[in-house]
Image (cartoon, rainbow, N blue to C red; front, side, top):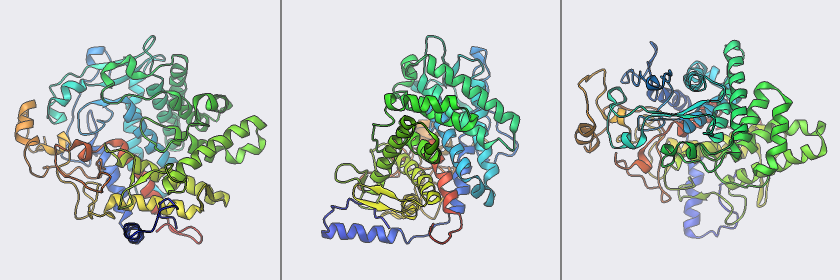
Length: 509
C-alpha cells in the first residue's frame, strides 16, 4: 500500500505523524453510494435554461431563456460553470467529457446503484446544448454572458439583468482548444448513448467529426479570438485538445483516420515528451496519455514499429503522471502533499486536481489489473490495488478523511461548507421568494451577510483547503469556497468504481 510520500522522506517526528495520519485515513469508510447520488444531483443545480418536469433540485427555476436571441440562435440550456451565471464553453465541455468517460468506464457500476439514468441526463443536458452551439459546420458559440458584468452583480440566475451577449468562433476566429474539447465531449458521449439512443449517438459522432475538422484546419487559441474569456478561462494551448479529440473520435467512430492523426501528431504536439503533474479543464496531456495507453496497449503488437513506439512513449508519460501522484518519482518530481495527505497543485481551486487525479488512478489501475501488470516507477513499483487505494484516499479526504474532519462535498456528512460562493445557493430560492433581487441588493442582503446559504448546493465540490490543510468557510473566499462543475465531474466515475464489489486480489475498500 503506497502512502504517496517520496521514498527519500526522512522519518522525523513530523514524518511519523504524517504517516500515522495517512494510515488512519485509509481506514476511514464513507458512504460512496450517497456521495455518488449527491454528486449527480449537483449538476441539476447548475442547469441553465428551461428546467424539465423531473428536476430534483426544487430551489432552482428556469433561467436565461433568451440566450442567443440577439444573434438569431437558440443557445438556451447548458451549464453555469461555477458560482456565477456565465456559460463558459471550455470548462463546460471538459465537464461533459469527464462525465461521459466515467459512464463509459463505469456504466455498469452506475447502473447497479440506480444512478446511470441520472448520469445520462447530466451528460445529455450538456450535449443538447453543444448541438445548438455547433449548428453550422464552421461555427461554435463559445460563451454566453458578459463575465465582467456578471462578476459585479450578485443575482440568482432566475433574476439576471446582466448582458447575455454570446461569443462565436468561426472563419477567421479560431478556437482549436475549445472546438477540440467540445468534439471530445460529443464523441465520448456518443459511446454512452450508443445502445439507448443510437440515432442521437450517430448525430453526436458526426457533429464531433465536423467540429474536429474545424478545430484542426483553423488553428488557434479560443481566448485570442474571444478576449472576453481570457481573464477567466485562458488556454495554455490547443495541441492537447486536438489529440484528446482525436483519441475520443477514434474510440467513438472506430476510424483509423483518427488513430493515424493521434500517432502522427503525438510527438510534435508534446504528448510523448511533456511530463505533467496535473490534469484539468485546461491541460489534457495526462488524460490523453492515460486514454491512449489504456486503449491501445493491446493493439501495439499489430502496429508498425514506429507507431508502437509512440504508444509506448505516451504510456511512459502517463506513468510519470501516475507515479507523481503516488509519490514515487523522486524528489522534486512528485505532486506535493499536505500534512493531511492531500495532493496539492496550486492554491486556487485545488480540489479539481485531486478529483481528476483520483479518476486517472482508478482508470489506469483497472487497466493494469486487466493486464496483470504493475506500475513501475523510478522509486518503487505499485500494484493495481495500490493505485485504486490512492484514488480511494483522495476521495476519502474529500468526503471528510482530513485533519479538519470536514467534507468538501457540500451536503455530504455532518460537516461541510455552508457559505459556498454561489449566487443561486446564497439567495432565497426563486420558487419561495419571487421578489426580484437586483445586483447591489444581492451583495448587500445576501453576499455580505455571515450566515449559512439558504439553499444547500448538494454534491458540489468546493475549491478546498490550502497547502496547510486549512479551509475558511466564508462566502467571500472564492479561492477555496467556490464549486465548479469540473470539480465534481471526475468524482462520479470514482465513486462508481469504489462501489464495485471487491474481489480476490483487488481490494477496493
